[in-house]
Image (cartoon, rainbow, N blue to C red; front, side, top):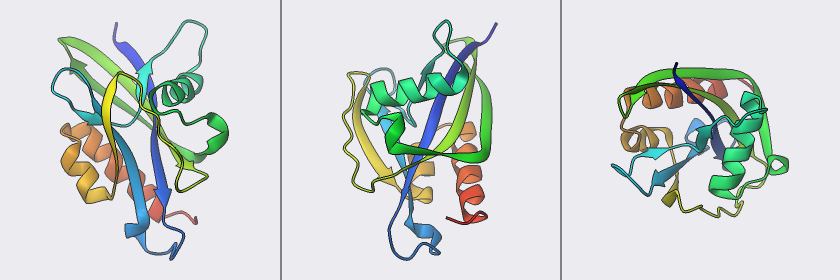
Amino acid sequence: MALRACGLIIFRRHLIPKMDNSTIEFLLLQASDGIHHWTPPKGHVDPGENDLETALRETREETGIEASQLTIIEGFRRELNYVARQKPKTVIYWLAEVKYYNVEIRLSQEHQAYRWLGLEEACQLAQFKEMKATLQEGHQFLCSTPA
């Protein structure tokens, strides 16, 4: 059975001008272990939690961002399936916008750095093709819906 994890692709937009798609920035976290890969916040589902509860809890634990500081974007949910450490893994992601552009990020010990990045830079740091594709799909979704 595949390991199951859930997370949020967190983004922010510059206040002006909202129609310029380059104003969307994604939050990526750099892992403290392994190959120090960059991903959005995510983690394993705890017993009794639903997927979205997991994503919100993991975001709070890994970034310090509370659910009340986020707006979950309706209509976007992606499931990634891949092999991690020789085991199948499924990760569910939603899009979430921070309500405050300069929200404080407080990293847990699981991560050593964070960056807000435009789509191109985020895709360069996200080494895995599935993550790159998900960021691109999220960006496309945001560009096709009103802010």
